[in-house]
Length: 270
Image 1 (cartoon, rainbow, N blue to C red):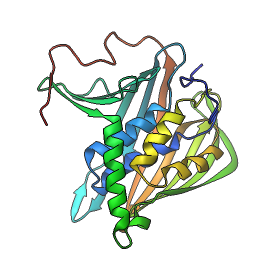
Image 2 (tube, rainbow, N blue to C red):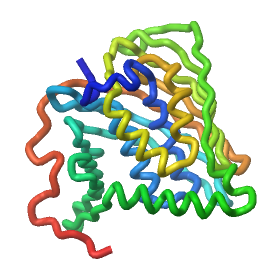
Image 3 (tube, helix red, strand yellow):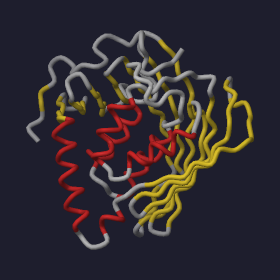
Image 4 (spheres, one colour):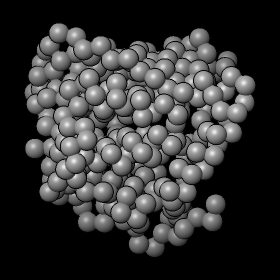
């Protein structure tokens, strides 16, 4: 049974996972890579953290071709892999750039395999820095409202089986700075999740993006884990179509050292 770590029943069996889909779209807005990576990783971290074993999660995503600022971005297919255990998470360990979150140490490590280096970001410091930036942005005329995020969730009655999971349909409208996202999400309660760790994640993500806390309340309407979704992101008048699909989610032992800096890697000075 797939469950999050920590048992405070702050938000149990609710579909907050859709936030992952929203945060990954931020990259198209030119937001700093660090903020994008951290937000998407932190929200992904609430997806599948087990109480007793490591959780292995595989998703695939397709993004259609789109044009932005005179440039054509070709269609892209990618697969993401995530391992998690307790307050530790490793994202895409099979790729050249690997992200590791350690809540026990309050750090985010970004591992660069090619040059055997890593960068380290303190989560508390990063949250404080983001808070300062948000406060300064809010002082600028019109910017405070633009920085907010919001969402509306409409549960549907339609159901169908996708793979081995029985799913229910949800219509999700999300608004971000200069961006709207319309999503059809098929979620399954066959995959049991406990969202205790979400308490920690909400506090941090709320500091990173104004309105995030209110957004999470809306997503409490969603029950179950997202198995398949179709999204249309509209930004600067351009549409970006994408799909995400759950391939595997299971409990099994992670390879040794999955949540640690590899031996011989040096800390980047930048």
